[in-house]
Amino acid sequence: MRAMVFERPGRPLQAAEVPVPEPGAGQVLVRIGACAVCRTDLHVLDGELPQPKLPLIPGHEIVGHVVAGGPGASRYRPGDRVGIPWLGWTCGECRYCRSDRENLCDRARFTGYTLDGGYAEYTVADERFCFPIPAGGTDAGAAPLMCAGVIGHRSLRKAGDARRLGLYGFGAAAHIVAQVARHEGRQVFAFTRPGDVAAQEFARSLGACWAGDSGTAPPEELEAAILFAPVGELVPQALKAVAKGGTVVCGGIHMSDIPSFPYELLWQERSVCSVANLTRRDAEEFLALAPRVPVRTEVVTFPLAEANEALTRLRTGKLQGAAVLVMD
Image 1 (cartoon, rainbow, N blue to C red):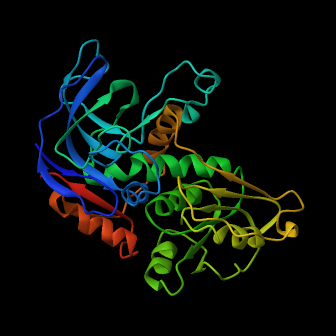
Image 2 (cartoon, one colour; image 1 turned 90 degrees about the vertical axis):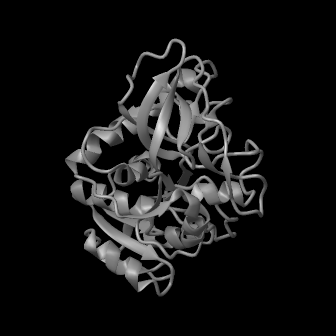
Protein backbone atom coordinates (compact mmCIF):
# COMPACT_ATOMS: atom_id res chain seq x y z
CA MET A 1 0.00 0.00 0.00
CA ARG A 2 1.04 3.62 -0.40
CA ALA A 3 2.03 5.51 2.73
CA MET A 4 3.80 8.67 3.83
CA VAL A 5 6.39 7.70 6.42
CA PHE A 6 8.07 9.74 9.16
CA GLU A 7 11.64 8.59 9.79
CA ARG A 8 13.12 11.22 12.08
CA PRO A 9 12.57 14.84 13.17
CA GLY A 10 13.68 17.49 10.73
CA ARG A 11 13.06 15.40 7.63
CA PRO A 12 10.01 15.60 5.36
CA LEU A 13 7.75 12.58 5.11
CA GLN A 14 8.88 9.96 2.63
CA ALA A 15 6.57 8.29 0.11
CA ALA A 16 6.83 4.50 0.46
CA GLU A 17 5.23 1.21 -0.48
CA VAL A 18 4.65 -0.82 2.69
CA PRO A 19 2.73 -4.03 3.40
CA VAL A 20 -0.96 -3.83 4.19
CA PRO A 21 -1.15 -4.44 7.97
CA GLU A 22 -2.84 -7.54 9.35
CA PRO A 23 -5.52 -7.00 12.00
CA GLY A 24 -4.68 -8.60 15.34
CA ALA A 25 -7.01 -9.78 18.08
CA GLY A 26 -9.86 -7.30 18.52
CA GLN A 27 -8.68 -5.13 15.65
CA VAL A 28 -10.21 -4.15 12.33
CA LEU A 29 -8.49 -3.48 9.02
CA VAL A 30 -9.75 -0.21 7.54
CA ARG A 31 -9.36 1.07 4.00
CA ILE A 32 -8.84 4.78 4.53
CA GLY A 33 -10.85 7.28 2.56
CA ALA A 34 -9.51 10.44 4.19
CA CYS A 35 -7.27 11.58 7.01
CA ALA A 36 -7.28 15.16 8.28
CA VAL A 37 -4.01 16.91 9.05
CA CYS A 38 -3.69 18.13 12.64
CA ARG A 39 -1.30 20.51 14.37
CA THR A 40 -0.41 17.61 16.65
CA ASP A 41 1.11 15.95 13.58
CA LEU A 42 3.47 18.92 13.36
CA HIS A 43 4.39 18.55 17.02
CA VAL A 44 5.27 14.88 16.38
CA LEU A 45 7.27 15.62 13.23
CA ASP A 46 9.13 18.51 14.87
CA GLY A 47 10.22 16.35 17.79
CA GLU A 48 8.15 18.33 20.32
CA LEU A 49 6.38 15.15 21.45
CA PRO A 50 8.91 12.61 22.75
CA GLN A 51 9.48 8.99 21.74
CA PRO A 52 7.20 8.47 18.75
CA LYS A 53 7.13 5.08 17.10
CA LEU A 54 9.80 5.13 14.36
CA PRO A 55 9.40 4.70 11.50
CA LEU A 56 5.87 6.05 11.82
CA ILE A 57 2.86 6.57 9.60
CA PRO A 58 1.33 9.78 11.08
CA GLY A 59 -2.30 10.85 11.11
CA HIS A 60 -5.11 10.42 13.63
CA GLU A 61 -8.28 11.91 12.10
CA ILE A 62 -9.21 8.93 10.00
CA VAL A 63 -12.40 7.97 8.18
CA GLY A 64 -12.67 4.82 6.12
CA HIS A 65 -14.44 1.52 5.63
CA VAL A 66 -13.88 -1.75 7.46
CA VAL A 67 -12.36 -4.45 5.26
CA ALA A 68 -11.95 -7.28 7.75
CA GLY A 69 -11.74 -8.07 11.44
CA GLY A 70 -9.06 -9.90 13.38
CA PRO A 71 -9.68 -12.73 15.88
CA GLY A 72 -12.47 -11.82 18.29
CA ALA A 73 -13.44 -8.61 16.49
CA SER A 74 -17.23 -8.52 16.13
CA ARG A 75 -18.36 -4.90 16.53
CA TYR A 76 -18.16 -4.00 12.83
CA ARG A 77 -18.83 -5.72 9.55
CA PRO A 78 -17.01 -5.31 6.25
CA GLY A 79 -18.24 -2.15 4.55
CA ASP A 80 -19.09 -0.27 7.76
CA ARG A 81 -17.83 3.32 7.77
CA VAL A 82 -15.84 4.21 10.88
CA GLY A 83 -13.78 7.02 12.33
CA ILE A 84 -10.50 6.51 14.16
CA PRO A 85 -9.28 9.19 16.61
CA TRP A 86 -6.08 10.06 18.50
CA LEU A 87 -6.72 7.74 21.46
CA GLY A 88 -6.04 4.26 20.09
CA TRP A 89 -5.81 1.98 23.13
CA THR A 90 -6.02 2.08 26.93
CA CYS A 91 -5.20 -0.53 29.54
CA GLY A 92 -8.53 -0.49 31.39
CA GLU A 93 -6.69 -1.29 34.62
CA CYS A 94 -4.89 1.82 35.91
CA ARG A 95 -6.45 4.26 38.40
CA TYR A 96 -7.37 6.64 35.59
CA CYS A 97 -9.13 4.04 33.46
CA ARG A 98 -10.98 2.78 36.54
CA SER A 99 -12.22 6.29 37.36
CA ASP A 100 -13.63 7.19 33.91
CA ARG A 101 -10.49 9.14 32.97
CA GLU A 102 -9.08 6.90 30.27
CA ASN A 103 -7.71 9.98 28.51
CA LEU A 104 -5.04 10.00 31.24
CA CYS A 105 -4.29 6.24 31.06
CA ASP A 106 -0.75 5.44 32.21
CA ARG A 107 -0.18 3.11 29.25
CA ALA A 108 -2.32 4.75 26.56
CA ARG A 109 -1.35 4.37 22.91
CA PHE A 110 -2.06 7.03 20.34
CA THR A 111 -2.91 6.80 16.65
CA GLY A 112 -0.28 8.42 14.45
CA TYR A 113 2.19 8.72 17.34
CA THR A 114 2.80 5.41 19.13
CA LEU A 115 0.63 3.49 16.65
CA ASP A 116 0.71 3.81 12.87
CA GLY A 117 -1.98 6.16 11.63
CA GLY A 118 -3.82 7.42 8.61
CA TYR A 119 -1.33 8.85 6.10
CA ALA A 120 -1.75 5.61 4.17
CA GLU A 121 -4.27 3.57 2.21
CA TYR A 122 -4.97 1.12 5.06
CA THR A 123 -4.60 0.96 8.81
CA VAL A 124 -5.53 -1.34 11.67
CA ALA A 125 -7.21 -0.16 14.86
CA ASP A 126 -8.67 -1.55 18.07
CA GLU A 127 -12.37 -1.85 17.29
CA ARG A 128 -13.23 -0.46 20.75
CA PHE A 129 -11.67 2.85 19.72
CA CYS A 130 -13.41 3.11 16.35
CA PHE A 131 -16.68 4.98 15.99
CA PRO A 132 -19.52 4.54 13.49
CA ILE A 133 -19.80 7.34 10.95
CA PRO A 134 -23.32 7.60 9.51
CA ALA A 135 -23.91 7.44 5.80
CA GLY A 136 -24.01 10.73 3.96
CA GLY A 137 -21.39 13.36 3.43
CA THR A 138 -17.84 12.76 2.30
CA ASP A 139 -15.02 11.03 4.14
CA ALA A 140 -13.01 14.24 3.80
CA GLY A 141 -15.77 16.26 5.43
CA ALA A 142 -16.08 13.82 8.33
CA ALA A 143 -12.36 13.36 9.03
CA PRO A 144 -11.82 16.63 11.02
CA LEU A 145 -14.56 15.57 13.42
CA MET A 146 -12.28 12.86 14.81
CA CYS A 147 -9.87 15.27 16.52
CA ALA A 148 -10.63 18.92 15.81
CA GLY A 149 -14.25 18.12 16.59
CA VAL A 150 -13.86 15.75 19.53
CA ILE A 151 -11.04 17.65 21.27
CA GLY A 152 -12.87 20.91 20.59
CA HIS A 153 -15.96 19.39 22.21
CA ARG A 154 -13.99 18.38 25.31
CA SER A 155 -12.47 21.87 25.48
CA LEU A 156 -15.90 23.48 25.22
CA ARG A 157 -17.21 21.34 28.07
CA LYS A 158 -14.21 22.44 30.17
CA ALA A 159 -15.30 26.03 29.56
CA GLY A 160 -18.54 25.30 31.41
CA ASP A 161 -21.65 27.30 30.60
CA ALA A 162 -19.79 30.48 29.63
CA ARG A 163 -22.02 32.62 27.43
CA ARG A 164 -19.26 34.91 26.14
CA LEU A 165 -16.58 32.61 24.75
CA GLY A 166 -13.22 33.56 23.25
CA LEU A 167 -11.48 31.27 20.74
CA TYR A 168 -7.77 31.92 20.23
CA GLY A 169 -6.48 30.49 16.95
CA PHE A 170 -9.26 30.14 14.41
CA GLY A 171 -8.29 26.93 12.62
CA ALA A 172 -9.79 23.47 12.26
CA ALA A 173 -10.92 23.01 15.88
CA ALA A 174 -12.18 26.56 16.41
CA HIS A 175 -14.26 26.58 13.25
CA ILE A 176 -16.12 23.53 14.55
CA VAL A 177 -16.39 24.75 18.16
CA ALA A 178 -17.78 28.08 16.94
CA GLN A 179 -20.67 26.29 15.26
CA VAL A 180 -21.47 24.23 18.35
CA ALA A 181 -21.18 27.26 20.63
CA ARG A 182 -23.59 29.29 18.48
CA HIS A 183 -25.98 26.31 18.44
CA GLU A 184 -25.91 26.45 22.26
CA GLY A 185 -26.72 30.17 22.25
CA ARG A 186 -23.26 31.44 23.20
CA GLN A 187 -21.53 34.52 21.85
CA VAL A 188 -18.25 33.74 20.09
CA PHE A 189 -15.27 36.10 20.02
CA ALA A 190 -12.58 34.96 17.57
CA PHE A 191 -8.89 35.83 17.96
CA THR A 192 -6.54 35.26 15.01
CA ARG A 193 -2.95 35.92 14.03
CA PRO A 194 -2.37 39.66 13.71
CA GLY A 195 -3.57 40.90 10.35
CA ASP A 196 -5.28 37.66 9.32
CA VAL A 197 -8.32 39.37 7.86
CA ALA A 198 -9.41 36.25 5.95
CA ALA A 199 -9.62 34.18 9.16
CA GLN A 200 -11.53 36.97 10.88
CA GLU A 201 -14.05 37.13 8.04
CA PHE A 202 -14.32 33.33 8.14
CA ALA A 203 -15.09 33.48 11.87
CA ARG A 204 -17.81 36.07 11.33
CA SER A 205 -19.32 33.92 8.58
CA LEU A 206 -19.71 31.16 11.18
CA GLY A 207 -21.54 33.44 13.59
CA ALA A 208 -18.77 35.08 15.62
CA CYS A 209 -20.05 38.38 16.99
CA TRP A 210 -16.51 39.82 16.98
CA ALA A 211 -13.19 38.88 15.40
CA GLY A 212 -9.80 40.53 15.81
CA ASP A 213 -6.07 40.11 16.39
CA SER A 214 -4.96 37.90 19.29
CA GLY A 215 -3.31 40.84 21.06
CA THR A 216 -6.45 42.98 20.94
CA ALA A 217 -8.85 43.31 23.87
CA PRO A 218 -12.38 42.15 23.02
CA PRO A 219 -15.20 44.71 23.23
CA GLU A 220 -16.54 43.10 26.42
CA GLU A 221 -15.24 40.75 29.10
CA LEU A 222 -15.25 37.05 28.29
CA GLU A 223 -16.56 34.39 30.62
CA ALA A 224 -14.16 31.77 29.23
CA ALA A 225 -11.53 31.40 26.55
CA ILE A 226 -10.19 28.36 24.70
CA LEU A 227 -6.67 28.45 23.28
CA PHE A 228 -6.11 26.30 20.21
CA ALA A 229 -3.02 28.21 19.08
CA PRO A 230 0.04 26.56 20.71
CA VAL A 231 1.44 29.91 21.85
CA GLY A 232 2.18 30.22 25.56
CA GLU A 233 2.16 34.02 25.56
CA LEU A 234 -1.56 33.91 24.78
CA VAL A 235 -2.33 32.53 28.25
CA PRO A 236 -1.79 35.84 30.08
CA GLN A 237 -3.49 37.64 27.18
CA ALA A 238 -6.55 35.45 27.63
CA LEU A 239 -6.50 35.91 31.41
CA LYS A 240 -6.62 39.66 30.86
CA ALA A 241 -9.69 39.18 28.67
CA VAL A 242 -11.75 36.96 31.00
CA ALA A 243 -13.94 38.31 33.77
CA LYS A 244 -13.76 37.37 37.45
CA GLY A 245 -14.35 33.64 37.87
CA GLY A 246 -13.48 33.03 34.20
CA THR A 247 -11.66 30.02 32.81
CA VAL A 248 -8.86 29.77 30.25
CA VAL A 249 -8.74 26.34 28.60
CA CYS A 250 -5.56 25.24 26.80
CA GLY A 251 -6.83 22.85 24.14
CA GLY A 252 -3.58 21.69 22.54
CA ILE A 253 -1.27 18.79 23.35
CA HIS A 254 1.81 21.02 23.16
CA MET A 255 2.38 24.72 23.77
CA SER A 256 5.39 27.01 23.89
CA ASP A 257 6.44 28.13 27.36
CA ILE A 258 3.99 30.35 29.23
CA PRO A 259 5.72 33.58 30.29
CA SER A 260 5.51 34.78 33.87
CA PHE A 261 2.60 37.06 34.64
CA PRO A 262 1.39 38.99 37.70
CA TYR A 263 -0.81 37.14 40.14
CA GLU A 264 -3.51 39.76 39.74
CA LEU A 265 -4.35 38.26 36.32
CA LEU A 266 -5.22 34.96 38.01
CA TRP A 267 -6.77 36.40 41.16
CA GLN A 268 -10.51 36.68 41.70
CA GLU A 269 -10.98 33.01 40.99
CA ARG A 270 -9.86 32.93 37.41
CA SER A 271 -8.45 29.55 36.43
CA VAL A 272 -6.27 27.94 33.77
CA CYS A 273 -6.65 24.28 32.77
CA SER A 274 -5.48 21.97 30.02
CA VAL A 275 -7.23 19.36 27.93
CA ALA A 276 -5.47 16.03 27.50
CA ASN A 277 -6.48 13.64 24.75
CA LEU A 278 -10.09 12.38 24.69
CA THR A 279 -12.30 9.63 26.00
CA ARG A 280 -14.58 7.34 24.07
CA ARG A 281 -17.49 9.09 25.74
CA ASP A 282 -16.29 12.42 24.31
CA ALA A 283 -16.34 10.95 20.81
CA GLU A 284 -19.77 9.35 21.25
CA GLU A 285 -21.29 12.56 22.62
CA PHE A 286 -19.82 14.78 19.94
CA LEU A 287 -20.66 12.50 17.01
CA ALA A 288 -24.25 12.41 18.24
CA LEU A 289 -24.32 16.21 18.60
CA ALA A 290 -22.64 17.16 15.30
CA PRO A 291 -25.57 16.29 13.00
CA ARG A 292 -28.01 18.16 15.24
CA VAL A 293 -26.08 21.46 14.99
CA PRO A 294 -25.41 20.61 12.11
CA VAL A 295 -21.61 20.95 11.96
CA ARG A 296 -20.30 21.81 8.49
CA THR A 297 -16.56 21.38 8.09
CA GLU A 298 -14.55 23.61 5.78
CA VAL A 299 -11.83 21.45 4.22
CA VAL A 300 -8.98 21.82 1.75
CA THR A 301 -8.11 18.44 0.24
CA PHE A 302 -4.72 17.14 -0.85
CA PRO A 303 -3.75 13.82 -2.43
CA LEU A 304 -1.79 11.53 -0.10
CA ALA A 305 1.44 12.22 -1.98
CA GLU A 306 1.15 15.93 -1.12
CA ALA A 307 1.13 15.41 2.66
CA ASN A 308 4.24 17.56 3.09
CA GLU A 309 2.58 20.44 1.26
CA ALA A 310 -0.51 20.12 3.49
CA LEU A 311 1.71 20.23 6.58
CA THR A 312 3.52 23.30 5.29
CA ARG A 313 0.24 25.08 4.63
CA LEU A 314 -0.90 24.27 8.16
CA ARG A 315 2.38 25.42 9.69
CA THR A 316 2.30 28.77 7.89
CA GLY A 317 -1.37 29.44 8.59
CA LYS A 318 -2.30 29.38 4.91
CA LEU A 319 -5.45 27.33 5.39
CA GLN A 320 -9.08 28.06 6.08
CA GLY A 321 -10.67 25.26 8.07
CA ALA A 322 -8.92 21.87 7.92
CA ALA A 323 -6.43 20.23 5.57
CA VAL A 324 -7.43 16.69 4.62
CA LEU A 325 -5.52 13.97 2.77
CA VAL A 326 -7.67 11.91 0.41
CA MET A 327 -6.57 8.50 -0.81
CA ASP A 328 -8.38 8.16 -4.14
